[in-house]
Image 1 (cartoon, rainbow, N blue to C red):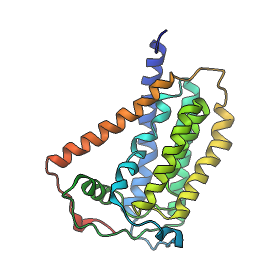
Image 2: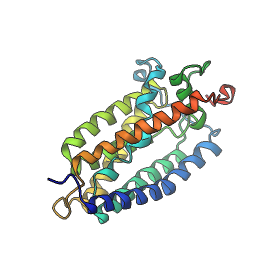
Image 3: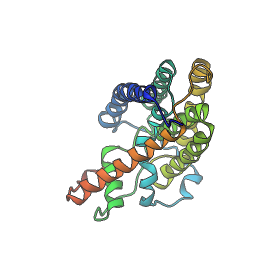
Length: 249
C-alpha cells in the first residue's frame, strides 16, 4: 500500500506555488490599510461579552496558528481546478474584509505591554507591533480560519472536524489577546460562510472528479506551525528587542 505517489507530490508543489501567489495578492491591501490608514476615526464595537475574558498573553500560541492554518487546503486538495477555486475563495474573503475595513473602520484599544523578557510576552509584543489595532471588523483571523476549515471538511471530513475545533480556538484567542470584538468574530465567520456556500461550494463541490490528497498529508500544516514557532523562538533567543513604546494601542 502506497502512502502517496508522484502525482500527490506534483499537486502539493503546484498548490504551494498557487498558495504563495494568493498570499502575495491577498495580503498587501490589508497591510496598506493597516499601516497607512490606522489613525482614521474608528468605531468601538465593544459589547459586555468582550469584557468577560481577561487579557491572557499565553493565547498567542493559539492566535499564531492562523498564520499557517490557512495553508491547510494546500495539503488536502489535489485537483488543479479545485485548488484555483480555493485560492479565489480566500482572495474574495480578504478583499471583502478590506472593503469593509475601509468603509467602516473599527479599532480595539489594546492593553499596554511592559515586558518582553519571556518568549510569549515577546511574541505578543511582536504581534502588536506588526499588526495595528484596526482592521477589526470583520476578523480576518476568524474568516481565514473558518474558510480553511470549511474547505477541509468539504474534502476530508475527519480533518475538517479537527480544523473546525481549531478555528473555534483561534476565534477564542482573538478575545483573550484583545485583538477583536465579539461582533468581529461573528462577521468573520459570516463572510467565510457566504463565500464558501455561494462561491466555493458551487464550483468545487465535485469530490468524485479527483480524489483529495492522502489524509495524513494534512499533518504538514502542523510541521509548518512548529517550524514557524521554532524560528520565532530562535529570533527571541538571539536577543532581538521590540520598541514597546512604538506599539500603537
